[in-house]
Each structure stands twice: as structure tokens, then as C-alpha cells.
Image (cartoon, rainbow, N blue to C red; front, side, top):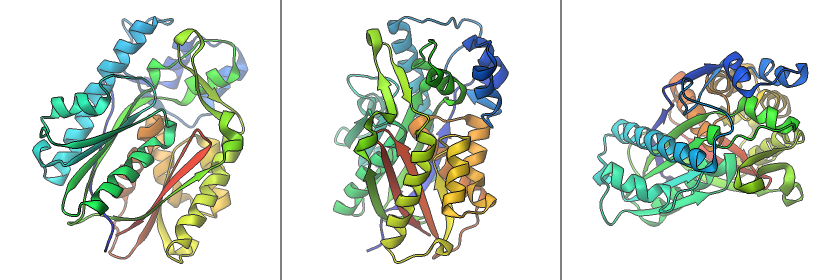
Amino acid sequence: MPGPRIAAVATATPPHRFTQAELLALAGYRDARRRGFFARSDIEGRHLWLDPVTFRPHETLDQLSARFRAGALALGEAAARRALAGAGWTPADLDFLATTTCTGRLTPSLDAHLIGRLGCRADVQRVHVGDTGCASAMVALQQAVNYLRAFPGRRALVLAVEICSAAYFLDDRLESAVAHAIFADGAGALALATDGPGPAVLAHRTLFRPEHLDAMGFEYPGGRPRVILSKDVRRLGAVMMGEMAALLMAAQGLKREDVRYWVLHSAGRRVIDRARTLLELDEPQVAASRAVLRRHGNMSSATILFVLEETLRQAAPVPGEWGLMIGLGPGFAAEGALLRW
């Protein structure tokens, strides 16, 4: 039986867009090294859920939480409604909702809030994937795919939303400056069904390297989120993309030249560069990842859905073509899906 199909994908970003120069001024870095992180990022601008007129650094925990809540709910609802419209569905058509975020916390969780805001049925099933970092949209996708394989004929929605601007920490650590130079806010959603058009998700694989557990994540000094981002991530990320690609291709006996579409997480310029070299890809094969990084920055878990949307916008796939979708996250982990049109 063919796998569940991606019926539609959609994204949403905050109304305020900032250039790297504007964000550098907000962060207040004056030394050449930290300023260089912004200048060499290959990012032209980013959207953040904050008002440049009223924003002041050093927000309290309550202010950060309130900003996360407002942004996550608004962007999450917008992306979800656009994906439903793209599939030709109403919220009442949904049987399963999988949500994810790692940049804030809500109780009741994000899924419960959106069920009410969207107007889903009272018996809609749901799951929330939390604290899984940049790879968590792929984890949520796996939950939705497993659900649809168990219940053919039903419909599912996957939603990833991140307000990375509500997880900043101004200190002297270089990794904090790197994070401030690349992360942004946004939401992505995709609709899944077991019939109809769109690429089928034929396989999903997870790969952990727990010896690198401390390479990426969050810590919470005084209760405030602070990014952990080792410089080893740029090497680990590319290597694990290569390992994940090999696993997914082996699932169908494919070779690299059999795969036309590469939906790779826009983790950063150097990760994309290294992954391209390691996977022996042409520049057009990473064009979608670079375009998302350039226009939006790294929006943590939502990013991979932006890359998928960009890939589908650029592509003219024909039946039988193959694609790989690979996200990276703390753990250290790679999550991948094999797609076929």
C-alpha cells in the first residue's frame, strides 16, 4: 500500500521583518567577531514576533512567555488554515492533529489551543511533540504517518511553530551570539491523507548519536532559556545527513542519482555547504535550503516545512520521482523521510 500523501503545505511568518543590520543593533554586539556571525550568515533578513517600536532587551520571563503564547497561537493558526485550504478541507474534516514547538511551553498544550481556535471536531485525536528541537517537525510527521497507516481514509495535519525570539539570552558566550545571528520565528503546516495527489511518505527513519547529547539544546539558568550550540554541530549535522540519506535510500535500494529532490534542514550556511559536499549534490539540489535560509533564517522545527514548500514551488515533479526530507535536532539526532511522487 502506498504511504500517506502530502496533500498541501503552508507557512506563516510574523508581520515584522528585520535586516541582519537591524538585529545586530538590537543585540548590541560591537566586537568584530560577533558582528561577523551576522555578516557571514548568508541571511538577508528574518521575521520575529516582536514590535521594533516597543521591544526592549532583557524582557522578564513573564513577558517572554506572553510573547511566545501570542506568536505561537497566531502563526500556528494561520499556517494551519492555509494548509487546510490548500488541501480543500475544513477544520471539521481533520481526524488527527500533531503539533510541535521547542521555544516555549503552554499547558494546555499547543494542540488543545488550536483545536478550539480552528473549530475542529470534539473527537479529533491529537499529539504534541515538545522539546525535540529543530528535528521535531519530522517527529510529528512520523506520528501522523503512523496514524494514517493505522486508519486509512482519515486525514491529518502536522504543525510546527517556533518563536525563537522568545528564547534569547544576552551574555558573553559566542554560541549565544551565533544563535542570535541565525534564528527566527515562523510556522509551517502540512496536510496528509491516504489518497489524492501529492508525494507519498514511503519510509521514515531516526538516527541518534547520544555521545553528542550536549552539542545542542537549551539550558535554563534562572528559568530563562539559553541556547546550547556547539561549533561541532556544523560537522555533525552534515555527517548525519549523509548517514540518514544512506538509510533512506537503502530502504528502497536507491542510489544517490535516483533522488531528484533534497529537502534539507536550513541549519546554517556551513551545514548546507558541508552536506552538499558530502552528499555530492549540485548547487540546484540545495537551492531550496539556501533560499529559505537567505529569506527567513533558521526557524528551528518549522524550517524543514518552509524548505518543503519552497521545493514544491520550484519543482515540476513527475510520477515516480524520489525525494529525501532530512531534519536535524538535539540528541544529537537526524530524522528523515523518503518521498515519492
